[in-house]
Image (cartoon, rainbow, N blue to C red):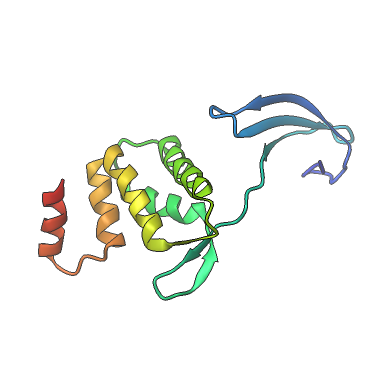
Length: 147
């Protein structure tokens, strides 16, 4: 592992710990040249998932896009960033378990909505209003009545 400070490739591992679900190993390292410490994360490389957008374009699955949307939907709500990360982790696990190379953005949106509904109804409505592109108040009322 190359040191991010001095680019030296001689580093030693000081501490290794798995995360809660044991899918990622956190390693604390020290550079043998400059003696600075840094953290690395190790996880199994999985096959990439391709997202098919509404207009037919294809792009790699990008968890940060979901996190960004969830952050906006949960703004001023009592929901931690850790909870949002867990939600996205669960979606990624589901995608990996499906063993498919491609998935539509609509399917991903539905996965997000299902989990967000359990987490916070206000955030669910906020996310749904953008995701489902409500055109008028009636569509909005119809979604609220489902809750």
